[in-house]
Length: 283
Image 1 (cartoon, rainbow, N blue to C red):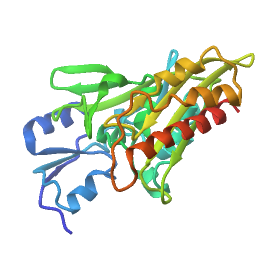
Image 2 (cartoon, rainbow, N blue to C red):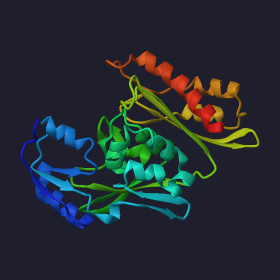
Image 3 (cartoon, rainbow, N blue to C red):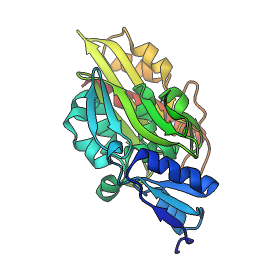
Image 4 (cartoon, rainbow, N blue to C red):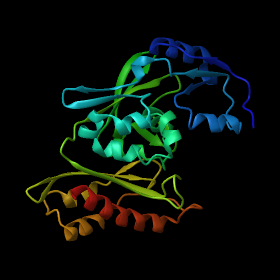
């Protein structure tokens, strides 16, 4: 189908983009990579009066070290995330997870910030942001504010970013030296996750000294597997200990029954995939 008609602007600054959103009011929609918005427009599931394209705003792209943190512009593409050496060294889990997003064509167009703001519960990157305690910088008419990942995802397809705001960047603490792995289960290649697990593990002298585990599609928002982390930390980095810790992966989750899988099957997958992800992360 052909989208409904709309006005189009491509501002070159954050301030101009916010002004355009304010002028459009409820009729405005932000265009980042377009991998989520464009299909919705074509199906006429949305008919905004104005599209605000962010691609000309240079401040929204790029990766930089800031002390012990890595700051990534919201418009940085998945392809650039996968191939950036700073991210590869300091946030290996994000790099490995981004490499599983869709296909190369989508990764060249889709953006990290766009995927996170879209907040599909089956999306891959939310679990990484939650597990690694990312902080989101949001710009709006009243200035800029920072929101932690635990408060950023609010519900299905809903985040802390208001209609008159835009995501500027995502800040991750450095996890240099940690093992990392993303274990993803799909029925067909390049489809949405039925369940996935993001794991970052630090091992010291054969003992798990720190652990971060996030779950994809086990509820309306990405979930931190706190019970698994608590069971891992201080224990040996052995297959037996990891299997025992992974048994708690479904604790506190709320998976749904749908055409892809039943809730109890998702719980089973969470346990199995957590064991695999942690084993791979510790090598």
